[in-house]
Image 1: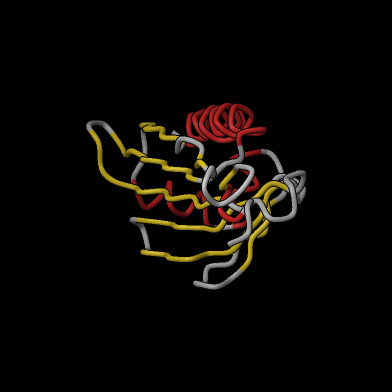
Image 2: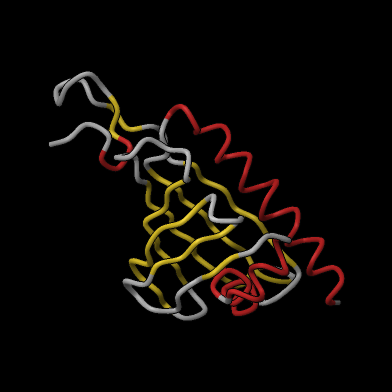
Length: 148
């Protein structure tokens, strides 16, 4: 086993630890289907975040966002309900890779995203955790407020 796969960190196999998963729950005044499309549709993703994105709508397809600063591969897509991706930042060490799970569901007065982002390297854990808020949730709320 290679240290670094799925962001397992440690000096050797016996001392490896996984960083805590990032977990966030965010509600929006829209539908789960709209949130799913905002994430997976390249034009909507780019418009909602204010940064270029190119996303595949196929399992096994590759994606990039935020000027190529993040990217990965789709592992599972359940239309309107769930996205699972292999995810990494361009500045991460070569073997670092994380897994992102986004679940879209109905919530009072709108929709909810439950995010679990597992395996983020310790050296970028805070940046990724705060990045979801600053580069997705806040811009999405602003974008959606203009659509209403």
